[in-house]
Image (cartoon, rainbow, N blue to C red; front, side):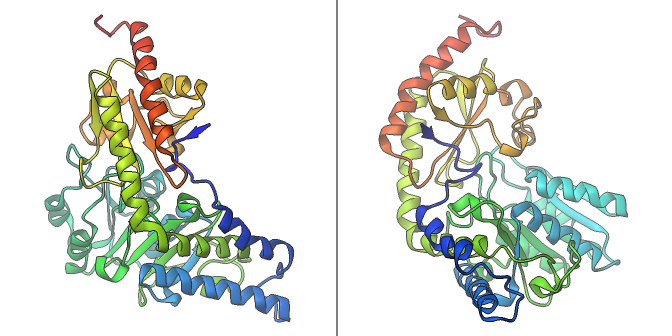
Length: 383
């Protein structure tokens, strides 16, 4: 099997699994217990908090562990809103993950004005629009660090500066960038940041929300005192330890891995673009994740491409894994101005730690024939 769907989820690194193993079988106690095994579990959680904070240049007390990116996004937006009743405007980009987009839309039920920021043909947000719409009534601006479908990286520092000019909070969904590129929260001037372990070789079911000290937000889950009264529920100790180990591995490997993946990604595009007619690259040509390649194939349905590739033991996607059951074209591509009929033919390859050059060559060898076969069956294709 050739797995090229790392943006949906990455396989857990064996070194991460090994780090977690002890906290399943030996140090399995509840970290809230005051006996010795419990305190050892608590020490593991707090050490992991320090590792994650160091990884992002944050403070340990600014790290709140969650079940993943979706919970972190919800906690950031709802938690901030429910902690105050003065500011009533929420701004987010039109290409956000549904975890942010649907949370923002939900808040309109509570009287919040919801504003969606347009993007250009590369998927970059309109900074002038954000400046025009932001004022003293703005509670939060939420713009993802990099898009999960096309990989475009946003100018989040500039957005943060606009937010801060009006006293608003800036949140970024960094689920696709943490562990893939260097991130310094202080340098980027981010107030709240969401991340998820399984996107960078950690386990599923664990993530975190980083919240700048001094920002007040309410809990979504009520119960015990966990996570400094902001996230009730017994801590997922093995998951948290695995998340920290994934951070340690990424910190050591990001520079070389980013270079390697970019070379593989560019080779993949070069090989396909030279053999398949009428395809177009989606996303920014330069300012995008090194591992992500999204393009549209005219006169072909994306789902047919995925199924045909799967028959060749090649795993890819048409966009977000959270939208894979939808027959609607990608909201990201539509927001970028790509016509629906072309957006329906989109394909995303996302590479990762175990992607090999020979796997890229296999895709280059197989996909042109698949496209030609599917086009011959399409009534829209002019033969």
